[in-house]
Amino acid sequence: MITLLPGEVGFGQWQAIYEGAGARLDPASAPCVAASAAAVERILAKGAPVYGINTGFGKLASVRIADDELALLQRNIVLSHAAGTGAPSPVPVVRLMMALKLASLAQGASGVRPATVALLEELLVHGLTPVVPCQGSVGASGDLAPLSHMTAAMIGVGEIWVDGARVPAADALAKAGLAPLTLGPKEGLALLNGTQFSTANALAALFGAQRLVRTALITGALSTEAAKGSDTPFDPRIHALRRHKGQIEVAAALRSLMAGSAIRASHAIDDPRVQDPYCLRCQPQVMGAVLDVLRQAATTLLTEANGVSDNPLIFAEDDTALSGGNFHAEPVAFAADMIALALCEIGSIAERRIAMLVDPALSGLPAFLTPRPGLNSGFMIPQVTAAALVSENKQMAYPASVDSIPTSANQEDHVSMAAHGARRLAPMLANAEAVLGIELLAAAQGCEFHTGLASSPALEAVRGLLRAQVPALDEDRHFHPDMQAAEALVRAGAVADAAGQDLPGVA
Image 1 (cartoon, helix red, strand yellow):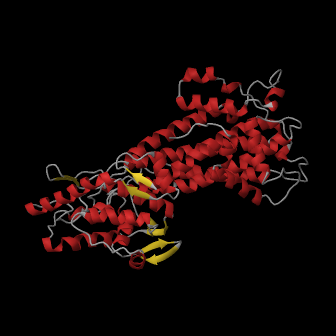
Image 2 (tube, rainbow, N blue to C red; image 1 turned 180 degrees about the vertical axis):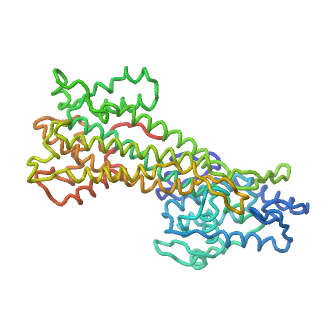
Image 3 (cartoon, rainbow, N blue to C red; image 1 turned 90 degrees about the horizontal axis):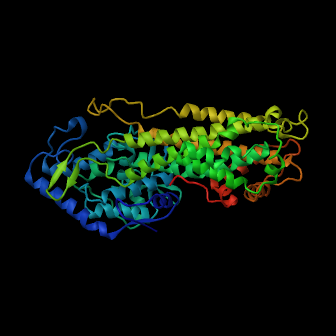
């Protein structure tokens, strides 16, 4: 069970929640929540119009709402804004979104009552996850549609996932012994306004990207071994002169992964080749830059995850409601675009290593990594598949943040597009994982031709992991199961675990 201390939740804690851990609020947050709710009551008592509390929303902000219609106002905004479409968002993403919203509300700047916060907390504790369509947000004024579907479930409307089944929300709440929420002033707006959907999707991709970077260092080192490439380009003196932290760390990791290799020792002296192709030689420069940009994205997303992004914000110390624009998800959109670029480049350079290995003119290995080329096609088409996946990722890597389209009758005239910018990262991650799975197979196969020579202990451990599931390719066979097995090892993080190295990470 993760204890959420609002404003101070760590990267690893968010990842644990995404991966299934339960979450509860630190009880120390309770006084802030209560004070914020009390401030809303005092603001209402003054009788002045305050956006989102006793007025309409968006373009209708100038419409004053009577006191006896305030509860209906909040219910109406939830039901009208629950206008998402598309497939249901993955349950882990929605759970993370809920935890992000919970930690935001608990900072005492949103004006919601303790009971409202408690219900959201209980949904997480009981494993009740609202069904949230994945499309419909432009990333400002917050992730309105996705968060409205979450909030609708809290008032007993819509559906909730219960043990893998879609159950009417009212029934799911009743079975868990929970009463549907009757929204108070400001509460509907506070729940559906914010960047939590975009942030959850971006964080989910970042968690996967961390595994991907570490795996790519290993498959890259193994490809270098298969091609009898040099580790001279990883000399620390080269990278110290350029000073980029990620580059320095990646070079050190590659040296460590190849340390003790008999394959490397076999051609360390009098090798007629002067320089390796860029896909081998420039791994520190490319993967180091990837690491640096992912770390910047992680910094942005962790800041966003611990912030408050709804509107208006309530300041209980002087009973002030300030209307601003914290719901604008531009930081998340930029972070998502950075992650997209990184995912694209990880796959791109890996595909070039695969292409190099299957080309005898570059690798010095049998054509397409098969002992009898011609009769057998070997790795010919897996390389084509990797190329296709990389091309897909290139098309998806176009920045989402540079797009905008006016909404709400031009009241919301510049939006971030963070939601789909973050959501498109999941298929990009899957594509890159598949490319690394193919590289793992190809690199291990390449090493098979260095008879009597072993790689480093770390890389031999990785080869052993793979060979326990996929034998060497002596002649053509149904290739798809091999690819599935290798991809599963990449996705699970098993490749990085097998290497037993302290590899650099995103956070």
